[in-house]
Each structure stands twice: as C-alpha cells, then as structure tokens.
Amino acid sequence: MTSGRFVPLRASRWLDLATYPAVVIPCSLGFQGLTDPAARAAVVVLCLAFLLIHRFVFQTARDERQLMIYSGAQVVVITGLLLLRSRNSDTFTFLFFLLSIRVGAIFPPRRMLAWVALFFTISSLVLLWMRGLEAVLVILFNAAVFGLCSVFGQALREVEIARQENASMLEELRRAQRQIQDLAIAEERNRLARDLHDSAKQQAFALSAQLDAARSLLGRDPAAADRHLRQAEQLADLLRQELATLILELRPPALGDHGLADALRRYVTEWSQQSGIAAEFQVYGERPLPREVEHTLFRLSQEALANVARHSQARRVEVQLDCREAQVKLSVKDDGHGFDPALVPPGLGTQSMRERAAALPNGTLTLDSAPGQGTWVTVTGQC
Image (cartoon, rainbow, N blue to C red; front, side, top):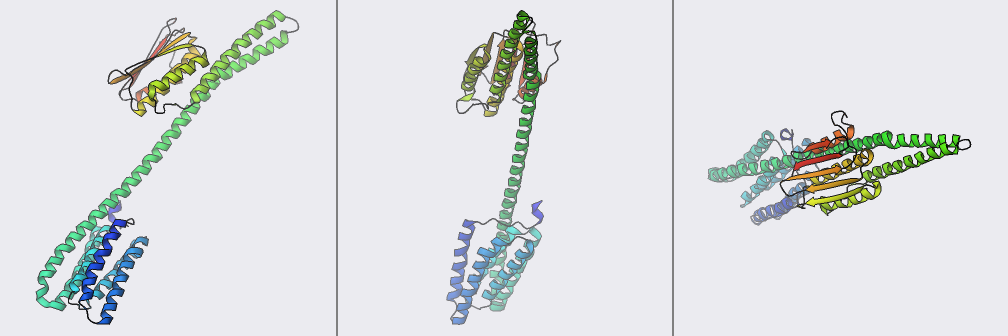
C-alpha cells in the first residue's frame, strides 16, 4: 500500500516550467523593494538556491529522510528571504505555497499537514513581526491558499499512486500472459509428442518390421518378400502423410490482415495437397471477427483436419464457415469410416478441441459420427 509512505514524483517538464516563472516573478517583486546592495545579492543567491534544490536535489531523492532534509533546506531559504524586511517581502510567501504543493505530492497526509503547518506558522510570525495586527487579513488569506495548495499536492500524490499501481498491475498481467503462452506452448509440444509416438513412431516400427521380413525372405521366397515390400510401401506412404500433417500443424496460423476466411481457404487447399484427400471450403457471410475468435477457430480447424488425415480414411472433406448471424459456426465433415462415439472414449485430441471451443464466447463443440457414415465436427460461438 503506497498511501502510507512518501511517493517521489517523476521528473515533470511541465511542472518545472511552471515553477520557474512562479519563483522568478515574486522574487523579482521582492528584489525591487530592497535598496541595500547586500540584501539584493542575498535575494539572488537565495532564489538560485531554491531553484537548484527544486530542480536537481528533489529529483535525486530516493528515501524519505533525504526528502525531509531537502524540504528543511527550502524552509531555511524561504525564511531567509522573508527576513530581509523588503516592503514587498509578502511575495516571498509564494515560495511556501509552491513548497506546500511539493510536500503534499510526496508525503502522506499527516506528515504533509505538519510541514504545511510549519510553513504557515513561519510566514505568519514574520508578517506579525513586520506589520503587527494589520497582517491578520493577509494571514487569513494565506491560510486559505495553503489549504488549496495542500489539496492540490495530495491530488498529485493520488495520481502518482494510481500510476504506480496501474504499472504494477500491467506488469503482473504481462507476466500472467507470458505464463499462459508458455503453458500453451508446452501443451502443444506434448500433444505433438503424443501424436508422433502414437502414429508416426508406430508406423516407422511397422515399416522396419516389414523391411526386415522382406530381407529375410528375399532369397528363398521372393513372392512373400514382394508382399512385405508392398506393405512397406503402403506404410511409408502413410508415414509421409502423417509427417506432412504434423509439419503443417507446426506452422503458425497465417491469419495476417486477410481474416479467418482467407487463411482457412489457403490452409484447406494446402492440407488437401499434403494429405491427398479432396477438400472443399465454403464461407457464408464473410466478415471480420475478433482476433481471439479467429485464432481459436483456425486452431480448431487444424485439429479437426489433422484427425481426418490420421483416422478417418476419408476421400472427401467439407469445411464450412458461417458468419451470417451473431453466432459464428465452423463445421468439418468427412466421408470416412466413422465410429460409434458411445464405444470409443474421447481422446486427448477431442478433449483439447472441446477446451478450445469452450474458450469462445458461449462456445460449444458437437461431434456426430456413426460407423460407415463419416464424422461431423461443429463448433459454434458468439461473435
């Protein structure tokens, strides 16, 4: 909680520019009220000291003790100006007003009130010493100005506290975002590792076994060796398709500035060429969608098509994107061998797709399939 300690202000060019004329003008008026050359020289020296402390010393303070010392030095400088007994010495009280803004901006309320009470007491005593009871009205006026300056200083303090808290929250959000990104990357790597182990690695082992069998039969049973070689060719082709699908998934979603429809159109065409499965893409009501929605739908289409290439043995796939209403719908339908969802437990790929769909506003994923009738994946969400 920052409200209970001092809050150093950041260097402010506009605050400095406003302070310089605010110091020079009243000091010039007080300078005109003096005839003694030594007193005039003292005014110049003390005003320069005030400006130098304001400009350089306050900006370098890093703890409350230093700020207390520097504020005390400013009090000594202003008190010296007031004691020069110029007929315009009232103008030097303006420096106390500036200092009230400064202490109000950096110190907590109780400490700020103590400082402002000190400024008011010193200026009032000097006025009473120089003018007597005639200075009462001026003292009352000064009390009101000190109050306004204190309130303004505290307002600056609250703004600075809010800025620091916002900066801290922004940094926390950035750290959380980086952690989420790291988790997503780790999850994607694990999924790809499982896919390589469950499909490509197993096919590579089977291919090696067929080649070993063909080598052992090559001299004594060429017909059997030829059968093993043909099976090895089929496994090699399946392995090539599997690796091509995985490589295609590893590419980042190239949404760019073209939108989801164009990105899907390009991806479906490339996927069809890699997998050897005919694919058709249709879009209805093409329009821009929120970037998060587009990214999620693109990833879902990648996963759905990857499942088609691995498991369905389909010859044709239809991909549709419907944005005609407030609810966007993505569907991927194949004519593969299908399966009975009641008999086949959902795998990690299906669970991952459901989690992605749930991240959409009011997002849902439905999976319809039956043996011999293909599979139909539909994702809906608000946009």
